[in-house]
Each structure stands twice: as C-alpha cells, then as structure tokens.
Amino acid sequence: MGGGEARFLRENKLMTRTAVFFATLAIAAGTMLAALPAYAQPARVFVSGTGSDSNPCTYTAPCRSFAQAFSVVAANGEIDALDPAGYGPLTITGPVSIQGHGFASITQAAGGCSGPNITSCTAITINAGASDTVLLNGLLIDGQGTGSAGIVVNGAGSVQIVDCVIRYLNGVAIYAAYQLSNALVSISNTVASDNAVGIAVLHYNSVSPLVILDAITATGNSSYGVFAANTQVMLTNSNVSNNYIGVSFEGAGQVMANNSVLSNNNFAGLSALGAAWLGKTAIFNNGYGVSGFAYSFGDNTINGNGIDVYGSLTPVTPQ
Image 1: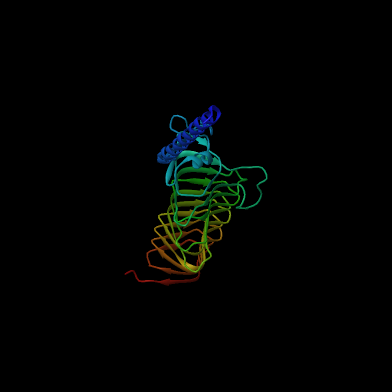
Image 2: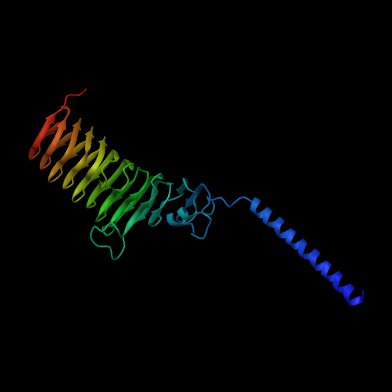
C-alpha cells in the first residue's frame, strides 16, 4: 500500500470517528434538552401604576397593564393590582382571577365611541371556554359617558363578579349573552350606576342558565336597572332604584326577587312578561309597582306606586 493510500485511509477513519463523535454528542444533547422541564408560566403576577409591560410581572418588577399580565399568567392563575391606577382594557380568553382590591380601575372612555354599541369601547370582554372560571374582584370601571360597556360575557363556564363599581357607560355595565346552557354568572356586592343599562342577561338556547344577583345596587340607569330574558334569575338583598324600569323580565325561565327593594323607578318597579316570584320585597314609589304577571308569597310591601299592580299578582302559599 502506497503512502498516499495509507494517508487516505487514516484520514477516512478519523473523519468517521469524528462524525460518530458529533452524532453521539448531538443525540446526548437532544436527550438532555428533552429532559429539561418546560418553562412554567407564573401562577401569580402583579400590575402597578409604576410598572412596565417590559417587566416580568413579578411583585418587585410588576407589569403596567392587565392585558400584559394576562398574557404572562398561567391558566387558573391570579393577577393582583398593587396600587390605585388605570390598567387598561382586557380580553379574557381563559380561566383567571383578577384581584383589584377595590382600587384597580379601567377608564373606558375613548374618542369615536358613540351609542350603546357593546362591540366597541368595552372595558373587559370575556371569551373564555365552556369549562373556564373567571373571577373579577374589586374593580372600578368608569365609562366617563363615552364607553360602551363595562363587562361583556360572550363565553365561559362560570363568571364571578364581586365588589365592583361600574358606572357612566352609555351602554350596559354588565352584559351576558349566553350561548351555552351550563353557563353561570354570579354578581355580588356590586354597583351598576348611571349607565344606559345596569345588568343585562340573555340566553338564546332552550335551557335557561342560572344567574345569581346578590347585594346588587342598580341605580340611576336611564333604561333598565336589571334586564333578563330566558334565564333563571335569583335577585336577593338588592336595591334597584331610580331607573326608568327597575327589573324587567321576559321570555322563558323565571325570576325570583327576595328581600330586595324596587323603588323610585320612573315606569315600573317590576315589569314581568315571564314567570316572576316575589318574597319579602318592598316595591314603592314607582310609576307601576308590578306591571305584568307575578306570584307573591304574601310577605311583600307593594304600596305608594302610581298603580300598585297593573296585571295580576297571584298569591302563593309558603311551604
């Protein structure tokens, strides 16, 4: 064998060993990388008026907006506001808890907003999945007369709105239009004041979902304090006063008002074009106390209205 041929064989063997080495190294590196855990999104993130959306949304380096915080937080995680500030509009597409602590706000006033168009100039839009739970706690939403809607629920498994104030919108403060029969909305200790509509809940399928309204104050709304259609509504411990119509209900489903006050509404305290039940409820100083058809457990106060009952009020014996 000549020298050139021998050198060729040696170089060939070296190249082969080198290729095997790098191939083995690549396989080992791939195995090591595959074994590394995926980066986990934080379960709790923070926003602050002095924060920045370029921050990682930690307690010591908070974000500036709810939108950025939502893009960072894990599913079923929590967004906490650290101080009073406006944190901008937000579209929610998954399960999350937002803790505003009574001082986090969204000022949803914007140029170009006109009329009660709920598809534009909305503070919080919820487009979550059918099994997702969304909690909004301690938020102030102010439309300043030009925002269209406060909270619009297009889809979710469960939405809980607690300790919020929603006001000065030329549309609706809280609007839930159900597409799923198992949807549930619970609103408690919340004020919806000086809007066109306080709270509106509607359903379009054959099965009516349950809507829980507890300790609600709906006042000064130019049309409805509470409007419901094709839903099962429980209104308890609430005050619906100084609107054009206090509570309006129509279609399938039913509404129960218990231990509540419907007063000083221009047209009617209760306008019932569906099944409505009244218990321990005071209805006074409205144009009509009850307009339509309702059932009474006999423990209500319906007096001092322009017309106390226009339609029928059927007694129901408590069990």
